[in-house]
Image (cartoon, rainbow, N blue to C red):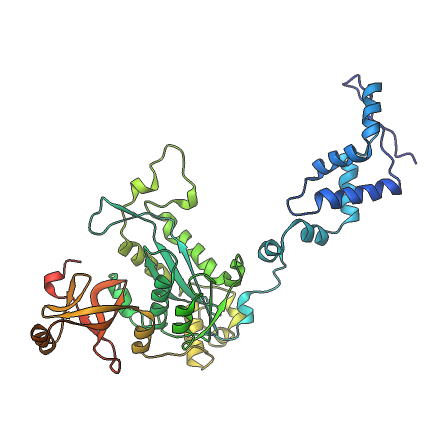
Length: 425
């Protein structure tokens, strides 16, 4: 069958190759080559697959054409690409050329939102961590660079409300995660005061425990985390490499980067460094306390921003003519009883989630890590006479100004402040 007039080559003396006419056998061979070389994980490109196809099925034709000094009579790249699209569907291509994890993470259909599967605020909190794209300096010696901090955030899936935060120099671990959860489950007024921010309880009204906590299968897997968390809430683990299962908290990190971290002096900007510019380490000028303060201010602003998607998740916002913000969605749901999270006493949160340590009771006060905290004079006097002893304590990594202590297991933890003789921190 003739396919129209062939083009005349007016620039080169060599003649163009004849148009290859494919039969059923050629089409079947193309199918076999594509399945063998192209349709597999890390498979060859179409061009490379065509080269291997020609080498396999047209080796004699190539030799003959070289001897006769003419173009070989073989399928063209355009023909090969055409039959590739005609023989195989896009869905077949996606499933054969990618792993199941890649498909689930990057190529699956996005027909809804993760928030649409959550009915009420407090149903699911998502927790995750990331290493911040900024270098910090020591607050005691501002010439010393101490590295990049780890940021933990906890977000309510239904309202987009950021309900917990912790910034530390620890890597992602149970120690850092438990601090973030303690912050999530307790009122934020005292926490903000530590970083020079004055708020009321209504400015950040989150001190609740969810029905389910969605987390990584890293720091939260183990006997100790499950022993402490199971009485409080149900733990649900996202599969490895499936960040889309915690998409709300993952997007939260993007917001913090765009609004705060990538604007700071000393930021790495995700490795986007211009040649000849000073290194981020040499420009570092912020302490961990200063960065935490900036993040808190951004979180307070985020919780009051307008997010139109919330109108589809929580109809109470429209019914009550409220600004479509995470905070309003949280508050109106709480007011109308459409809320799943619960509140527990601070004593239980302190006992379960703050870091457990043993402190020494001495005549000079309660001692921990060469720091001395206030103690009842009667107890200190008795220790001076009968010798020092130990007690159970809890410490807060955000502040060394106080320590929580209880002298027997039947009592609650009480706050004891740092004595003046060690108050240099």
